[in-house]
Image (cartoon, rainbow over the protein chains, first blue to last red):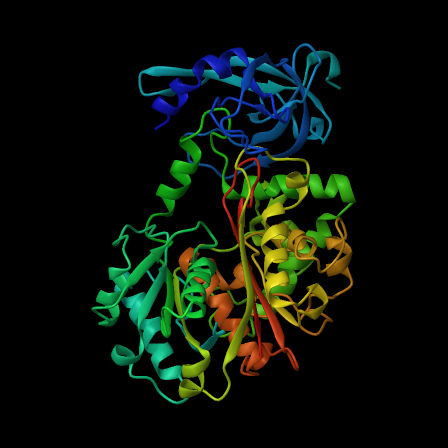
Length: 139
Length: 385
């Protein structure tokens, strides 16, 4: 199950803390590793950067067939989250969407991260983010 | 350095083989191969080494020794290759490299997969092993995201994507080993159940068991087995980061561009020289994008390429005459080997109802792995008559 993997990155994905490669500018999220996953710099120098909670949908799907314990239809997107201070590159993340209808979704739609319990791991709640279309943008 | 040549192939009918063990699958493909060799083969004496492609999803061995057991080919080096959905084509590539290097004279390449023994386990782990970065992200979602973006960026239509499936299912009805043998229309594809918008059921390959084998040898030995060997002209294997997902990876599979460039360079052929291709069509959109990645058409023109009928069986550049993964099925370790076997038959003029006239140069292509950069591994082999 996802316990160890989740706990390894809990700080990052609950605070949207990412890591910028000082060689090529790639923003790694949530991983902080010693090699860059874009330019191959090894060892790489990473600096912490804070991501904004608002991002843009680059592409999406709506899943209809999943195991019984997962709610469908489940919209899912690749989202670019810019850095909070507006500098540098965005981080590219997968994100589930919530409170979102299919007709609200398109490439380029602005979404905002909402932190909540995603599901539970037996006894423990697994908290992270989902995205939704901001209320003021809702049609 | 010697060339490598394919001199025989064997395959079982792909489909639901729940009653068959892994041994049964391997035996079936192997025996068909032994019988297929034009001038005959004494396998225990002639075969020097074995490459076995399988993800071993059914958990039956995780060793090349599984083939030794199933075939009776003992006291020979046997290696299991695992490389996601490119497993079979990479097993072939490894055998080709050993033959070309002169270290092995005759190599058996065999791929097998039992996909139907534990499908719930597969989707279960796909669904549960990630938190926000993909809880429940299944393969139809990874590939469906490329469809959404391709439609948005290049005005590719839903109908053009469906046409790939229509073409491959039509071809599959003429290919004797295909798992699903039915024809469908664009409307049938669009009306089939939504799996992961924008992909519907008929945009997705079936879950299929299967096995396939080919025999690879050097210049010196090739004519011993057949008067019509098929030369391996080039190959390429490349990888992409799982995570970086540069903008091109939202609509295409950059690793396929790299792998095919390597294969083109090694072979001296270019996209225009390819007479027939068996490419990875796990989903309809995958093949449409692959037209672009392999250089068969320009970036963003995959939709027009299928609209114009170019990849049809009677078109200028037939793609997936066997019906592809969409109708043949995708038993992972067997998939690439079966594509090689089909190209081998095509180049020898033995492809029956799906024969492409006068095919001289053929290409085989697989991609694998999902995530931000879906298709993060790609393998391409080019063969010639």
